[in-house]
Length: 346
Length: 51
Image (cartoon, one colour):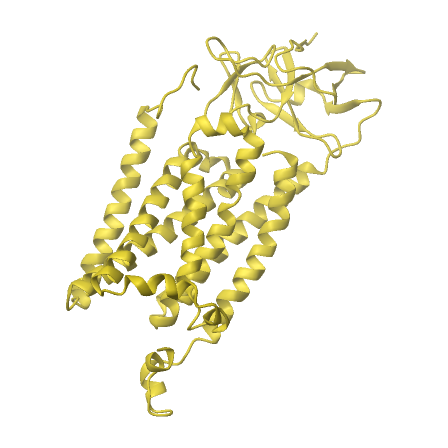
């Protein structure tokens, strides 16, 4: 969290994450070029450019698959949450690798003195019916690159705050379209010109795995979203003692947003399950030193009123709680963000 | 994620999987035969037909 603008809020975890990421990217690209060049040495400069194209292109697709797998993995199993912490750095790095891939393609056309034909290739409308081998697959790569550019350009917290988390998230869901375009770009490009069986195997495995993870995570979320019927505006949470100390029970009124009911010792408090930073699931976090801590990026809110501790200014909507016949109930109408509404248990 | 994002996500991925998956499958099934095989069938290569 930040009380003022900072380009990147570097910390040890982010430096370690980025160092590992850069190391893996360098290892993959270096390894790919070394092995491919040893097996079949490029004959000329164009051959070397082609090799770099393949190395960076396959690396970008692998990275994009990883970016898209992290979200559902973290929703299905909290052990993957540390990967989510710095996912935006991985996304920006993916865009840069994809941009380098596109740059090598332009370099190849310049070398072949064929750059004028590149635009012609993309606008030969009749070729779009020439499926699969003659399809201008570069257009699909361009669509994927543009999607990644929008994501990378708006990845900073500044844009997150400016656009508001719901709009920011809606824009960033556009990467799903970019991923589909990237998969088809490979299928209609590399898979048509190169008969190596690893290309379709890896393409189908990666796209299939990412799709399956998203469908499984969506199914889990749907079950949680089913919600319970509220009576007179109050929703039953359960016995207060059943909520583990320092943790929350997440409830949802039918058709409404989720509410996280935390217990911190003998204090219970209900807050919106949407973190003010990126709408992460605060209810899956825990109470640390009297503050609810979001599992995504560690944003903190006081249990008693949902306000971030000074000097920070983020606030969560709170909800009234009551005990009725020993059962904890939460009012489904939110209070203004930052309103004290915790309840002391007897 | 808000409920609306989750609802969109829930509808989007099966559709994306289906459309892109079908595209990948067709691209694999319909891809032209290897250069050698085409050369024996008509006397010119696949690359030549593309040009």
